[in-house]
Length: 238
Image (tube, rainbow, N blue to C red; front, side):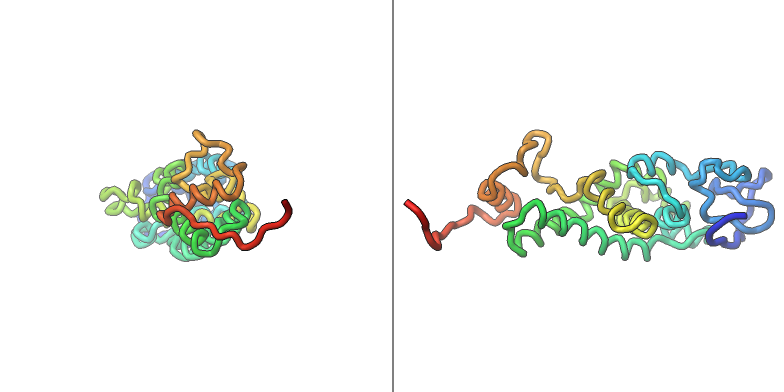
């Protein structure tokens, strides 16, 4: 007996009983959606989601409900052609919010004296399409994306906007499967998305150990705000 949702399959299958996109199914006309990442845990499942194990390893997270990650990797072009899993747009919508929350929380921890304006600019830079697409490429998300044939042929696996959207959906899948702490670990620890791209941590590993004034000056330079002006409000002592 398979847990999770099942969806009707209307497409043709090959003679071995495996749908054309490589997803296995039991006899009849239903595909258990949790099967693609089951890695042989269910005897009847003979195929896996391409790159599924590697993706979990890269994320440092193993999904309990694999329906979620399959949905997160399913582009609407695949859904329109095969209809075997919902498209990832709803998860993308949720992932955008989870990402904003975790990044904002971490930036406030890293820069306790930074005001709302600079924090907002920093966050928008970190969660930009370019930044997210770079992070998605480190996970090799393009290889695991479930695309329609046309989208695949047109280079969808390397398209920044598509990769960024998929990463947001994956973050939402982690959040729904394991909660906020799991999502935070993926975002902050694995992807290090709260570290501004412009700051080369490898060349300057002690950036966050500096005094607040030095960090503020470098951040103002990164954000194009110019050199800060300082006004003495009061003095104490000799």
